[in-house]
Image (cartoon, rainbow, N blue to C red; front, side, top):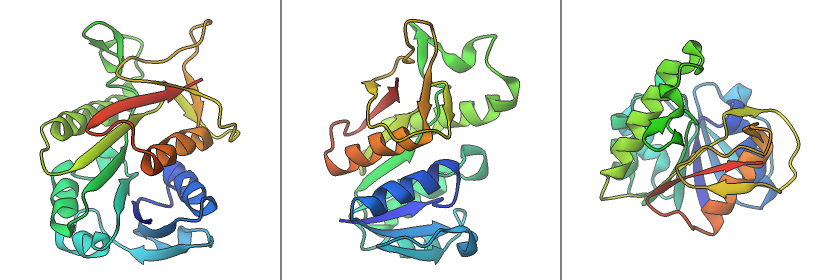
Amino acid sequence: MKVALIGASGFIGSRLLAELSSRGLSVTAIVRNPDKVATLPGVTVAKGDVFDKDGLAELLAGHDAAISAVHFTASDPQILLAAVKQSGVKRYLVVGGAGSLEVAPGVRLFDTPEFPAIYLDEARKGGVFLDLLKSEQALDWTFLSPSALIQPGERTGKFRLGTDQLLADDKGNSTISAEDYAVALVDELEKPAHSRRRFTVGY
């Protein structure tokens, strides 16, 4: 399988790149700064700009799937979607945020008073991206939301999956390591179970 990973040098992107490489997949790591990408088996690095629709489409062409791991505030979902469609790639996976997950019927995490203001713009733009995907007819998309807290940690391969509701343990903690998030997303890439849907991962 040939996979294009947009934003391969970021916090989540670098974990995804390592997971994809470890499974023997052929990966094109698309980044602004190629020097920031680790040298890994099966990985080819390409310099790209998420705001350059035509250039991005050219880099994506010929891949079996594309994964977007870029911040919502540092990209334009309309340009990303247009580039993927122009490239001819049908399978599109998006690294989502937790803010649009429900904590009660009709109440999203970013609607709660406790939600940190510093993350509000990013979270709301992630919600806009998800809404755009839900009306998308041409792509076989998947949007994976992490738990409320995602941080560096271990790759355990042991976690729970959910749909649109925030996952939390019996103490109310909602966490996932970036490494296990990457496992869940690449699992979905290899064995699709959430076509045209959002899902979430947590402990």
